[in-house]
Image (cartoon, rainbow, N blue to C red; front, side, top):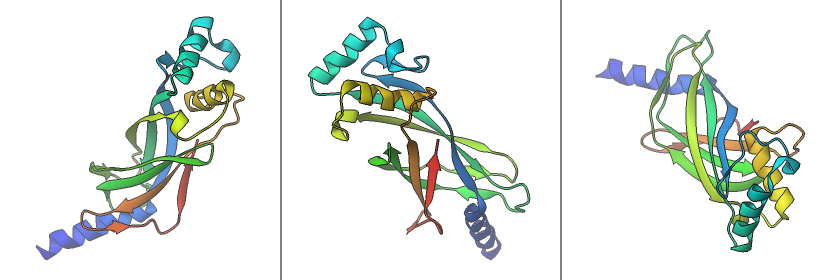
Length: 175
């Protein structure tokens, strides 16, 4: 039993060496409008602009997307790291929006990047009071539109099964 506990402790400690970063964001949907292939506000069709405007007039602007986080255990780390929980806070344009915990176990072998998909759904109007173009450009930044100056980032904390343990260094994933 002691050997198992030592292996578990080593796997948990190896997590400190793992790098996390945002790989990409996909499936961006704003008020029912798919934005993955829209590159600027001016590229929206009249129908798409009308749909988003109608949602805004109703006092809601739902945004859904999937964030693809990469966890990379360095190849020179001799231990397979084990991620059992991931506490996160999503920042859009440096503004905290959602927080949560991913309760799923990931084995992170050395030198093998692992994708961790995170699904998000929020109402932009709960967090921002901007005009229609600013809100659409924020969603387009998520979709990877070039030339859009909004920022998407995430802060993370780690936790074990028993207690929350903050990261040794505050971390921010920036796309």
